[in-house]
View 1 (cartoon, helix red, strand yellow):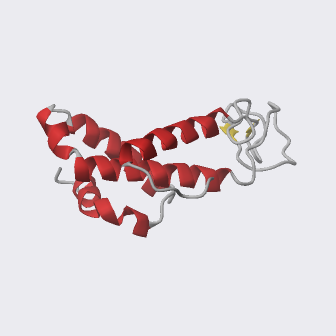
View 2 (cartoon, one colour):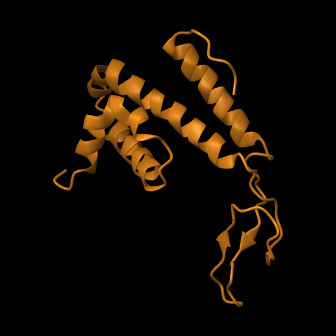
Length: 141
């Protein structure tokens, strides 16, 4: 993770997307041959991906996720949230003119539900879109 620099929003987003892609392509951070385990299970078919480090008596050997996986994943999601915040605050008029708000809202709703389910972004970081988050999460919607 590099030192912050001043740049325009389009440059920031371009740098961010390139950086995120580099992280996703890094086999040491996001191994594509992950080990599968069913901790404590005796046989059966219920297997799940492990994000723990060895020793793991996995029926299917693979590469464990690194110790800094959660930290990197949280950083990626926090920065992607900033892109959503920028779009909603600076470009929502254009999104509406293009009649694409339903797509943006659905994408953001999936993103934010995932983030909240696993507590991946600190609540204070979500403040710029808190009102929208509450609206999208309400049962009357």
